[in-house]
Amino acid sequence: MTSLLVGTRGSALATAQAGGVARRLGAAVGVEAELVRVTTHGDVSRASLSSLGGTGVFAAALREALLDNECDVVVHSMKDLPTASHPGLAVGAVPEREDARDALCARDGLTLAQLPEGARVGTGSPRRIAQLKHRRPDLEVVDIRGNVGTRLGFVDSGELDAVVLAAAGLARLELTERVTEYFDLADWPTAPAQGVLAVEVRSEDLETLEADAPLHRALEAVHDIDADAVASAERGVLARLEAGCAAPVGAHAVMSGDDLVVTARVYALDGSDMRTHSITVGIGDVRPREHASGSATASDRARALRERAARAGADLADALLAAGAADIAPLRKS
Image (cartoon, rainbow, N blue to C red; front, side, top):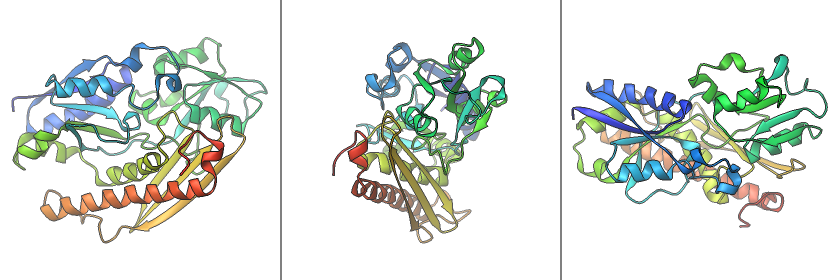
C-alpha cells in the first residue's frame, strides 16, 4: 500500500473529522492518506431531514463510492448510518468518541432558560424539536437545514435567537467559543452514537487480507473499544425500535468499571410527553484486557462486548415499548 484513499462528504465538518481520521490511518502504516470528497443527496437537498427519510441520506453515495473502488475506506458520522448492515460493507474501526452533548449557540450569551418568551430557536432534528418544546413550550422552534456555518449565520443575522448543534461538530471545527450552554446528557440525551465516527470498509478486504496487512494495522490503530461498545448499545435501542435519526429518540451509554449503563428517552413529537428507562449490564467477563489488542482473544472479547452492548440496547427498547413509547412517538408497536 503506497497511499490510502479516504471517502468523505464534502462539508467543512465532514472533511475536518475525516481528515483527522485519515491522518491517523496514514501515520499508522507510513503512507499518505488522501481525502476523496463525495456529494450525497442529503448535502444537496434543502428539504427537512424527516421528509428525506432520515437515516441513510448522507451515507448512500459514500457507500456507492466505496463499493465502486473509488476509495479504500469511508468515514461516516455513525449517527447517520442505518442500524442494519450494508451488503458488502462492514465497520472496520470506531475512533475515540468526541463530546456527545448538544450545545446551544445563542445571541448575547443567553442560555435556554434565559431566552425570552417566544424566542426563535433553530434545529433540523425532530428529537431536538421535541426536547426544546418539552423544556420551553413557549419557544418558536424553526426547522432549518444547512451546514454549521449556515446555521450559526442565522443567529448572527438576527433571523434566529439561537440554534442547537452537536458539541462534537463545533469542537471539530474549533467553534466551541460560540457555545452559550451545554446540555447535560442526563436531562438531554442526544442521538444514538452522536459524536462517534465509523470507518467503513469493504467486507472482502477484512476477510481476505492478512492480519498484518497495512489496512488491518491502520484500522486497529484508530479503533477504540469503548466507543464501539457504547455506540453499539445506543444503536441497539434504535434498531429494536425500528427508528432512525429522524425519530424523537435520545440515548446515552457509558462504561462504568465492569458495568455498561444505558439510558434512553422517547419523546412525543410536540414535546408534551416522554418515556425514559435505564439498564445496567455486567461486562467484566467480555471487556478486553489492556495491552491485549490485536490478539485473537482480544478480538473475540471485543466482538462479545459489542454483541452484549447491542443486546442491552434492545432490552432497553423493549422496556420503553412496554412503557408505552410507541403510543406517543412514531415507533414500531411491539
